[in-house]
Length: 69
Image 1 (cartoon, rainbow, N blue to C red):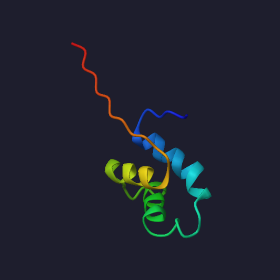
Image 2: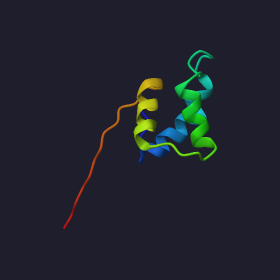
Image 3: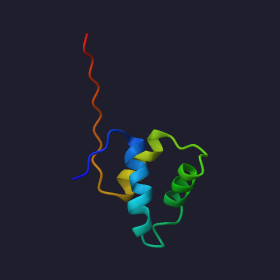
Image 4: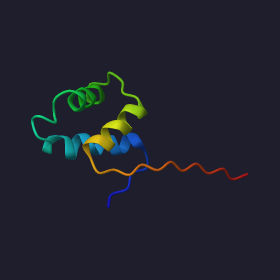
């Protein structure tokens, strides 16, 4: 199991490691658009990154917020 400290870090890993292994049919539409938006700095929201990670990979996303007074 691989753990990431942020959604952006996980998405970058997905772009470099999982995206190239997708079938040509899966690389059309949302996946390729999200990858291009990220690579070329066009802007991609964290919400959209999460959607792509969940749809095109086996990711489990948890949010942890800690406050220590």
